[in-house]
Every structure is written in structure tokens, then in C-alpha cells.
Length: 144
Image (cartoon, rainbow, N blue to C red; front, side, top):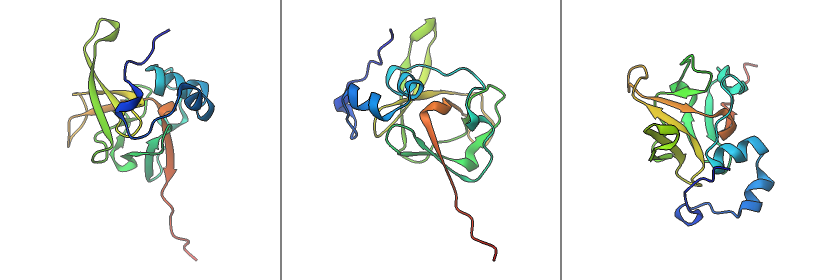
């Protein structure tokens, strides 16, 4: 089984493996803590269109504003830019490829990858596993 290579001590939020397993679904654990990937099109967040914020499902760190989300046609939630200071990146050489991995800056959880084929204004496509995200809809004022 693949084990994510990062050490627990590198990030502000630290939990034991047992604590992570207790607070995450099995899929979220596999993605966030083991570097796994969900099946394309399996996350309801692919179709989410409301204003709001996408946060890390592991620690609650706000990661992406919904205004930066776009339909990439890949089957994963995709964004043009993260919130400032929300993510970190590292080189991923798995599966005989070289990619840029994206992880939560607060807990180190694996989120997905970033590619240079996104739309303007950034040209970036942050391809993120829905299982690694928790959507927080923006509250709209009551029109009454």
C-alpha cells in the first residue's frame, strides 16, 4: 500500500494515524493521508456551483474560493488559484510521471495536482480530489 512520504512534524496540524482514521471517511483518509485519488466524476463537488469556500476536509483550512472554480471536463473539482498561503506544492514522481502535487499548508494532506493548462487569468488548473474538500456555502442575506 502506498504511504504518503511526508512526516507529521512538518505541519501545524498533527495527528496520529489513528486520530486521522477516526476523523476522516475511508476515502478521505486514502486521499489526504495516503496520496490516493478518487474516481473521476465520483464527487458531488464537481457539480457544485454556489458561492462559497472549499476547505481541507482534514483540518478545515480554507483552500479555494468558489469564484476560482471552473469545469475542466476532467471529473475532478478544478480551480485557477488557491487562497493565499493555503497550499504547498512538491514534486511527485509517482506512476512514471513528473507532476506538481498540491497539499494543505496546515495539515499536509494530499489534495491533488496542479497543471499549466488552465484558463486565464492564471493558466493553472488545480485538479483537486473532492474527497479532500469540504464545501462551505456562502450565506446569502434573507431577502425579506
